[in-house]
Length: 205
Image (spheres, rainbow, N blue to C red):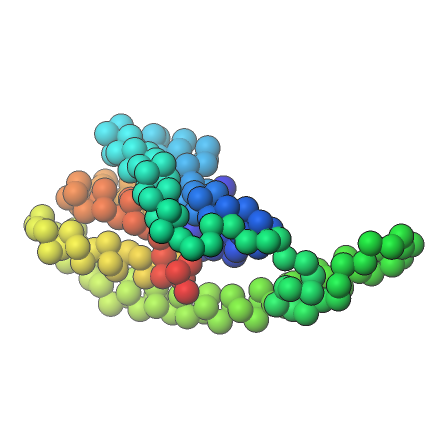
């Protein structure tokens, strides 16, 4: 159970370890939306039909769309990366026996290199995503959303705005439950419920 933003680097690690594209993409979608904590909150805070529709659409993507997408890929799995292939340029894998100190220092060095790689790559994107999300949340008047009559155009625009918000895990359920209680149209609530936790621009970048 991870948020939609953290799912991307985790999936990258899974794919680099040799897992198939179907497994990687399915995990990216299932982890933020189908874990036990989110499902429990989903059935507690939202009407039954919304919870079932959210689960049904997620399963449709995982079981139908993901396999269809992966059938078009030229490479469905890659050879697991050795340390020499990784972006941080570690040494070749040493199969000779080593002392406890050598093993600990090797693990510590590899951890530090991997951590620096993630910080260097991810932190600027986190700051950008947070800035974009703050701008959108501040610039969009709350009264405009709550008093908005249902229309197809608004149903397109609202999810487009939702994918720019780098939300944490279960935020989609909590936010849509609150908006539903404030009187937001059910169609918009369902659109936000499905897009907030399934995809984000940050994860895409």
